[in-house]
Image 1 (cartoon, helix red, strand yellow):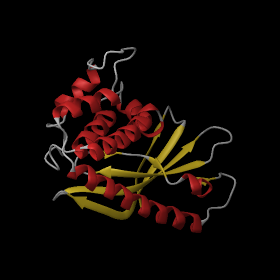
Image 2 (image 1 turned 135 degrees about the vertical axis):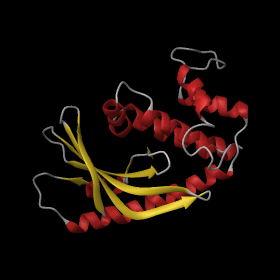
Image 3 (image 1 turned 30 degrees about the vertical axis):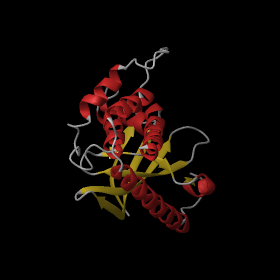
Amino acid sequence: SDVCSSDLLKNGQIVWALAKVNDSFELFKGDKIDSYLLFSNFHKYGFSTDVRFTPIRVVCNNTLTLSLNSAVERMVKISHRKQFNADNVKMMLGVAKDKLQSYKEMAAFLGSKKYKEETLVEYFQRIFPVAGSTDKKDVSRNASRALSLIDSQPGAEYAEGSWWSAFNTVTYMTDHELGRSADTRLQSAWYGYNKGLKTKALETAVEFAEAA
């Protein structure tokens, strides 16, 4: 793998680097997903360098950041006090390859299932609920924005009308629209609230697709 980009977040409190892995897949006649490892160094006592699997949708630069595997968590935490271990990196690459294959299967499944207008509205309501509301008909500002983006977001032409498109509307918003600045968007998308939001969006899209 090659390190293709790196930078600082939170005024230098987080140092990150993206390493491109030589594995990718393409679906829907042109929708390509590349595979990366995200290395994060948190400048806090007791924190190790964290490594996560990060597939990136090329057409829109949308990301989904996941821990490599809870069962091998010790393999993806690199202590600052220990010598670099090439075998651990090989393990990470192997796990990332398996993760990418699983993600490909989910993407293909989501792309094969079409949403209906009423279920799409319900999906975005669940991902972007109205705070404090008990009325299931209420639609939040972010849910309304998602509905307006689904046919115009980058990559909308791939698997049009499918749950893959619905899920990617959420990742597009979290990576490119939500937040006060590019720095806060990236921080939230990789380490904060929006990281969990994207995972929820994927799991919920699979749930809706299974019922379609």
